Image (cartoon, rainbow, N blue to C red; front, top):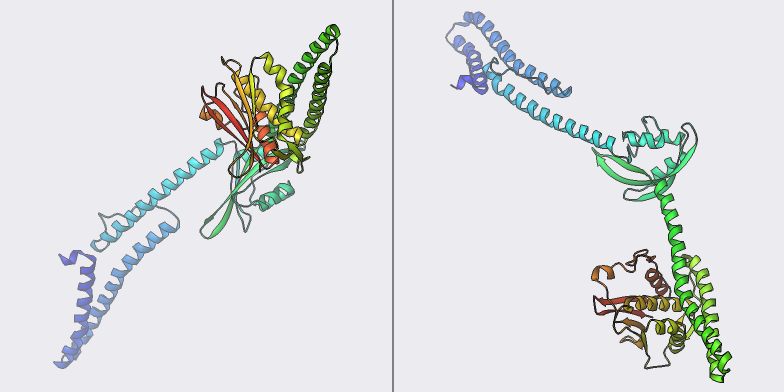
Length: 450
């Protein structure tokens, strides 16, 4: 049984060779040295046969190595017709080949899937060796985007668009950048592309993968929408101030008409003077607001001045009173300490309060007993807080989380910029704006100044 195994056959051959090599000693001891002439061919044959036995194994192994070298994993080593000593070896070779073949097919399948995905996506993709510049992967979308032929090296891009080439090399993995790409196919053209990079290593070599996305149309559309939004915003903010000014002007006109009939009293003159002064001051504030908003993102310094909250509230009350009276809304001003003062830009701060009061008026207009409370007080940290509270419809938690996002609005005709602008103005004052609301119970906005 042992003779049917490779180890058994090798052991038998070695044992027979040792036995044959020991016979010359026996023959010499017994004086039969002349028989050695017959023993030499036997020894030579055994050595030759042993070498041939081992050579078969070596040849099989060489064939296997050759198939691996050329990646010919389809090669099959016949196990049934193999000598006994090679059956186990061939079986092992076939198993290894089968494993390699399965891995190769799986890798090829993955590569084909990747190629299909790369062909379908509209994003241009380029992968190259960071040391040699050798291009490993370049999809069709990138060729069409940049009007490029197949590139062997990333350095070839420098001949067509040196600026883009430098941006690709400078872009660090994990970063994105918008840059300009240039094409010379048929006619010269330029467009904006978003570059995104990532890095990876394979077999000790470093590679960079860069994704190209044409964002030219998206940027143009965004710019156009931004201008439309800006126009809507300016209209919205101007109307918030012009509406109460117009209402106050109508009230003054009626008052003036009455004085022509009943005569002008000292009280009438004082009221007319205060009203006209209010219109003048708010109109000037509106003009400055329009100028300020035009470059609001560039503001680094406010026109700060000491503002008495009592005066601020009085001016707002005179400005908004005609609108409040017309809509039958009660405005209550609560100011326990009349000496509370702020360091603020009065025109911008008034714009914030007008926005919040207009929103409060809108919230309570359908309530049976509409009320708005305007108050100011120092908090526990001795920071001044101005609060606008209404008993209107309130807001859901979802709406509260979004109301300060630019262009978000729950109103059909709203621009969605009012509260966002309020927040930006408060940030310029190094303050905060917070909201507390409950559906059906009203809303409260708090302006906290540092």
